[in-house]
Length: 299
Length: 113
Image 1 (cartoon, each protein chain N blue to C red):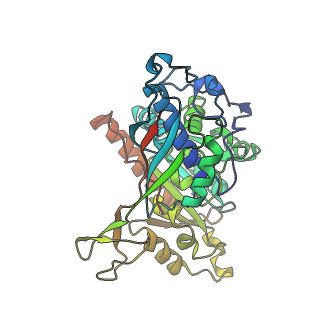
Image 2: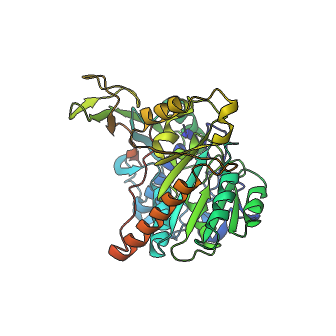
Image 3: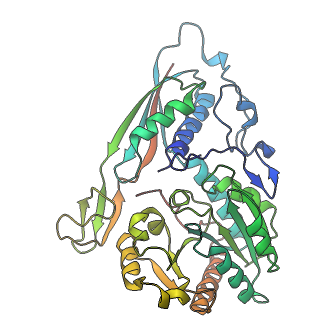
């Protein structure tokens, strides 16, 4: 679906099932004039193949202008709003975890679930190009997990997440963790309906990642600086990394974490708790207002 | 960044409009792309040609209107021009500038028949 990575929208699997033409969700197949019959979405059941003869009386087919004035990603954003409403109705706090591959997202997630056990229900949507290894790792902790395989895709989109949400038990005031495809570029542009994007940067990467991949660090509200237990063995400059991150996103909150030593886990869990409380409050005060303005892809 | 996704998004909006408005061919498409939207317009043109093949928009001319980058400098308390996302305020040199314009990616209008 994205040229950066050469990925396409085909071959999306949710827990092993092929969802290409699944009950009308418009995850569009390659554009071909005659493939439209499989492409109806929830709001539009037209099966039009371009045969609107009534509106094209002979002799009137002159050029005319049609105003559109719509955002290019408006379809994704509409699905994201739908997801956000479902989540808000149940006061669920949803996070979109983004990072490059190998930042320790899944391990951090497993640790988080372990620490929340008995206190807070967590469900997980795992996005990877191939395999359900990550979902299996999550399920081993006892949490419910759905694997989305994006096939050639380099990011999750809101429609995929909405379909996965239908298959997950999502109790009230629980936490939904969406682990995006490991990629610091493309997932930045796609709102999934989450409350926050959380970017994970591990100290085994370069300090300058935030300025090399500014979109993602700008889209995030929280940065977890992960694998901090390894700092004594590395020349990674923490202050410099945080300064770079705040250069692209002055309001970015930063927590130093380590799944191995447990550093920062208390602060991370408190942040999650505060988010759940806010989600619950939003539900009491104004159940139908969207939690957050959707992120416009920039950078 | 996501030129193929964007091109597919554009085509979706065009096809929706075709159903709604009942036209069968698009001859030109106007997009508004902000200077800070990080869209490679040449890549977008290439992808647009690729995804519109065999569609109502096959062969349509793609017109891309650049929208200028703008930001709000917290130090100057003023709207300033921005040429890049992490750019400093042209007046005071501060990086405390919030982008307020130039991130747009919009389908503006179509010429159809």
